[in-house]
Amino acid sequence: MAAAKDKVIDSGYTVVDGSSFDVSDPTNGVVPLSMSVEGLEGTGKTYFGLMTGPLPVVHVNFSDRDATPFLYDMLPERRLLTRLHHFRARDTNGWSRSEGKDALVKLSEIAQEEMAGGKMKGGTFIIDSGSSWWEVVQEVFVAPELERQQADYGKQVGGLAYGAGNLVVKGIINWMKAQGAFVILTHQLTQVWDAKGPVPGRWRARQNNNVPYMMECVIRLSKTCNVCGGPECMAPNHIGRTHWAHLMKFGKRTELEGTTFSNPSMSSVYGMYTGRLLPNVPERLVPEHGNPDPS
Image (tube, rainbow, N blue to C red):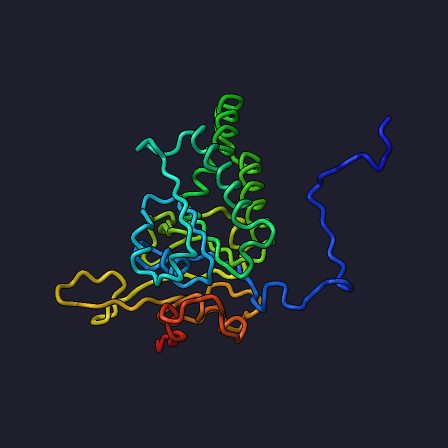
C-alpha cells in the first residue's frame, strides 16, 4: 500500500499566504489587466490589443479575418516582438468536432509555450475572437452532451450540457491570468431580441457567460461619423470616423464605469486604471489619453 505522502491529488486547490506575498514589482512595475473587448465589426477590437498592447504580443486568431496586414503598419520594434497564430476551419460550414478538438489542444500548447515561466510578463496575449473560440468549445464539449440529451429525452434540455465547456473556458483564462501578462478576449456583438423582435440599439456580446465575471475590465468599442455623429452612417461625403470606448466594467475603479472616451488604446485604459504610464509600447503607437464624450 502506497504511503500517504506518495498520493497525489490534483484538485486545482491553491492557497496564498498574505504574510509572505511578494508585492515588490513581480512584473517590473506593470499591473497586468484582463479585458473583454467587444464591439461591432470595424470598431477596432483587433487593433486595440495587437497595435497598442505592451510588448511582446501574441495574437491567437480564431476569426475568419487575417491579421497579417497589421504587420505592415507596425514599427520594426513592435513587429519583431509580435507573433500571430491563426486557426481556420477547413470546411466552409464551420468547425468539425475533431478539427475543433485539435485547435483547442494546440491553443493550450501555444499558451504554455508562449507564457509559461513568466516569458510574457508585462506583455499581451490576445484571443481574437473569443466569440469564435467559444463556438469551437461548444462544438467539442457542449454539442455531444446536447446530442445525448436529444437521444435520451427526445429534446435538448441544456443545463449541465454546458458544464465541461464552462470548465475549459474558465481553466484556460485563469491559467493565462496567472502568468503576469495582459489577457485580452475580443467579442463580437449580436442584437438583443424580445418577444416583439430585435430591440433597436441593444446589443450583447457573443461569449461564454462566465467571461464578464472573470475579466477585470469589459470595454465596448464603437465609432461615429465625424459629420453627422451617426454610428452607422453611409451618407455620401460624410468623411471620417471617431473611435470610442465605453467602460462597462472597470475592476476596482468602479467610479469610472460608464465613462466614454475617444481614441482608445491600452495606454489610455491602463493610465485610467492605475494612474501610471504603460511600458513596452513604441512611442509612435501610443495615442494621447482619450477625450471624454461631451454628451
